[in-house]
Structures are given as C-alpha cells and as structure tokens.
Amino acid sequence: MSQPASSRPTVLIVARLPQHLMQLLHDNFTCHNLLDGLSEEQLREIAPQVRGIAANGEAKVPREFMARFPALEIVSVFGVGYDGVEVPAARERGIHVTHTPDVLTDDVADMALALLLGVARNVVRADRFARSGEWKNGPFPFTTKVTGARLGIVGLGRIGEAIARRAAAFDMDIAYHNRSQKDVPYRYFGDIASLAAAVDFLVLATPGGADTRALVNAEVLEALGPKGFLINVARGSVVDQAALTQALKDGKIAGAGLDVFENEPNIPADLAALDNVVVTPHMASGTLVTRTAMADLAYNNLAAHFAGKPVITPVPQ
Ligand code: NAP
Ligand code: 8YV
Image 1 (cartoon, rainbow, N blue to C red):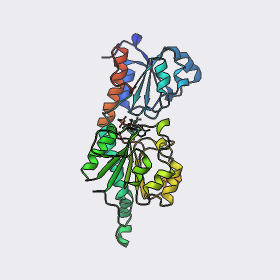
Image 2 (image 1 turned 180 degrees about the horizontal axis):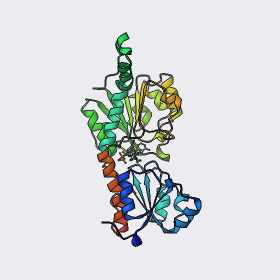
Image 3 (image 1 turned 180 degrees about the vertical axis):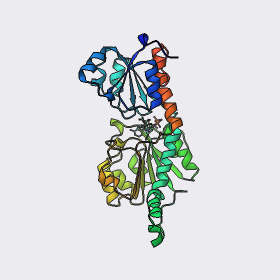
Image 4 (image 1 turned 30 degrees about the vertical axis):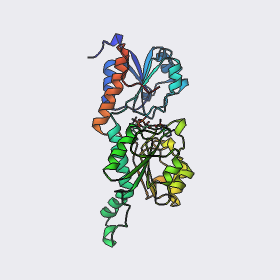
C-alpha cells in the first residue's frame, strides 16, 4: 500500500533502473532522479532530506557523494555486485548497504554457459556465415569441443557454483580459484595463473573492486595459452582489457566471451572487431523474471528499513 505523500521518505535515484522498480519507488517514496539532470543547486536543496539512495551494480557511490547527504540511512543496490559503493565509508556512518544476491544466480550462470558455448562453437560468426550465403563456397571451419573439456572458475561463490553445476552436465573437468578453499568436489588452485595453465576455459565470477583489479593480466592470459578461452561475467575491471585485446589479436589465447567491460557502455573498436570474441551488453541477469525479482528485492530492502524493520539482504561484513 502507498504511504501518504507527506510522510514519505526521500530517495535519490542515481542509476538507470527498470520501469517496475521506478514505479515502486515513485509510488512509495518522494523521489529525485540524478539522471533527470538535477542541477547542482537543486541537489543542494534536496540533500538534507535524502534518506535513501537507489543504485545499480554499475553505479558509483563514493565517500564524497554520500557525504553530501547528512540524513542518509540506506543505499539499496539493484544488483548483487556492490563494488561501486564505498562500503567502509557507509559503515562509518551506520548507513546500510543492501544488494540483490541469489535471485539472479541462475541467469548469470546460464549466460556464462551461453558465452562459453557461443565462443567455442563460434555461433555468432556461423550465423553470419549461414545468412550471408558464404556457406555456398564451402563448409564452416571446425570449432572447439566443449563436452569433457577442462573448466577453471575464478570466484566459486553463488554464481561460480551454479556455473560448475551446469558444466558438470557437459562432463567438464572442473577446477577453481578463490582466496580460500571450499569443501567442494573440484580441484583448488591457490593462484590464478596455475589454474589458467591447467584449463581450456577460464570463467570469471568474482566481485569487482580494488581486490580483483586486473587479476587477469598478460601473464595469466599467456598461461591460458593459444587454445584457451576466457569468459567474463564478473566485472570489466577484473581483466586488463588492453592485455586481453592484444592477446586475442596475437593468438595468445583462442577467444573470449565477454558480458562486462572496463568502461561500459564503451567497447574499444579493435576489441569489438575481433572474430574470436563474443560480446554482450552486461545483460547476464537480464531476463524479465529475474530483473523483476531483483527490483522487488531492491525495493523491499528500502521499504523494510523505512518501516523500522531489519533490511533483508545487507551486503556481507
Ligand atoms: P559471491 O557468492 O560473493 O561469490 C564471489 C566469489 O569470488 C567468492 O567465492 C569469493 O571467494 C571469490 N573472490 C572474492 N574475491 C576474490 C579474489 N580477490 N580473488 C579470487 N576470488 C575471489 O558473489 P556472486 O553472487 O557469485 O556474484 C559474483 C559477482 O558476479 C558479483 O560480485 C558481480 O561482480 C558479478 N555479477 C555480474 C553480473 C552480470 O550481469 N554480468 C550479474 C551478477 C553478478 P573468496 O572470498 O574465498 O575469495
Ligand atoms: C545488473 C550486475 O546488470 O548484479 C550485478 O552485479 O552487474 C547485474 O545483475 C546490474 O546491477 C543492473 O544494472
């Protein structure tokens, strides 16, 4: 049920959010949208009232930004990744940070497999080949077998484990790298370069942020080798994108399936031009069912907090 306008908490929207979530926010809170081009003066005027921020997985909410809102109590992220929010700065002020884990796990894992199969079997190029009539000149070049291949997962968390379960159905030989070993039936590698050297497909499913910045660098790509493929559904920041582009151009790795990039929504032209790459626009969680569940959870975290209840899915300590 909607609250009367006079008692509604004020929420600042700082990212492009789906219609369903926008509706919930506007029906229940007094909303201001940074993307509507709020002027500096307007922002200064509303700042003392702002009690909540609605962000997404890509939004930047640094310390200095939060400092502008003295009454801020909660930042709700529409997304599981919260690397854009300066969580220690929020904690210092007792500001809650929430995210949307679990509800998107299946879709992101599905997309990782779609990219893996897509690049190994060269589906996008084959589609162009079949449509254009090139087929009349002869058959399509051979591609790479996935069933039974060796898979390395970097970040065996909720999404990483869901990727492993799907890969098991392809009889893949599964190994992983995390900072800490887990009680799972997969081989553990304490360093990422050794994992890369031991697999055919390296899939990234870690958080972004400073701890994982350029975890996949030229050395790791060299270890993956000319028959190896990189799949990234984590964050663009986890890969040194210039080193990846060079490795793809030089045939130092066989190919890449990428849903995320360093400077979204921009993809460098030389990377996008490569035939051994499948690129998608940060859409791994982008099904109607999942984005609706994410929207409900992002809203429910704000609603719970403003009703004096505990938030549902706080980011971990
Ligand atoms: P999660 O359950 O927290 O899993 C993250 C895993 O990464 C953990 O197993 C963690 O293990 C490992 N990890 C963390 N820091 C690491 C490091 N420095 N080196 C190696 N491993 C590290 O999170 P999740 O729900 O699976 O989500 C994972 C990430 O996927 C999100 O944070 C987000 O960046 C990305 N994502 C992308 C999309 C998309 O649309 N493409 C959608 C959803 C999520 P240890 O703590 O033991 O290291
Ligand atoms: C979303 C994501 O695309 O959950 C995440 O971390 O990156 C994605 O699910 C994003 O948060 C929505 O903009």
